[in-house]
Amino acid sequence: MSGTGHIKSVTLPEIAGRKGGEPIVCLTAYTTSIAQLVDRHCDVVLVGDSVGMVLHGLPSTLGVTLEMMILHGQAVRRGLERALMVVDLPFGTYEESAAQAFRSAARVMAETGCEAVKLEGGVVMAETIRFLVQRGIPVMAHVGLTPQAVNTLGGYKVQGRGADAERILADAKAVAEAGAFSVVLEKVTASLADRITEAVDIPTIGIGASVNCDGQVLVIEDMLGMFQEFQPKFVKRYAELGRDAEAAIAAFAEDVRRRRFPGPEHVFGDTTQR
Image (cartoon, rainbow, N blue to C red; front, top):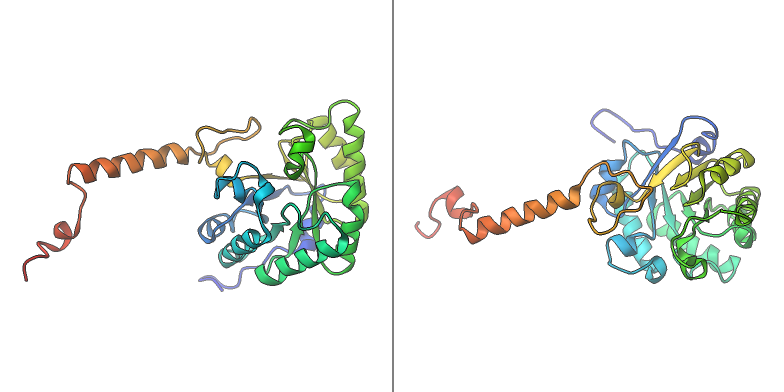
């Protein structure tokens, strides 16, 4: 409950119904405080396995564990009232079999309270998606640049050029037919993203794709400018919090060194005298 009454939560049918309509707003979140900030503005909040890189300093998403995703999912859940929450299944927790995927997804949903899970892969994961959906686990799919397969793809390169476009189109069609309620299109050419958006009957969520997707998602640390040394080309920075935070930290350090930071004696008087 809020101070103004009950806040209506976004539902899966509402997201599915936004196909071709009002664009879907999605950002990542990994902590309660960030979840509280994005909740009123986002339709979907994604607890992405990008947490491994942006919060844990890992070189890729491959080292993220199910326990990490559950921990951060629980934190985000505490900060949400309105937005629909989706949690990534990390590498190695769903690819082996549909049964493995079900065990992982069921645990994530039970322990975090999320409404859906996200997994990467197209045609090869279609049967797993169908298996999960038939057993009550909603799935957001992810095709194009799939970071968990970065070694196979040869890096974080734009996907969908040339003959590769047909493969990614087939991936998107396969996950839609398998029952995914939406599909993320990451770092694919705009022309391919437009083709996919026209070809499938579920919402497409772009990240470095096309403005014509049914929605957009960004890693929140990227759009807030938390990192100075890394800036994806497709990301519009809406703030420079990393630069501002560093300046604030430097100012604090200077105040301490010059003994002008307000300690207890400045607020309460000389605490050594009673």
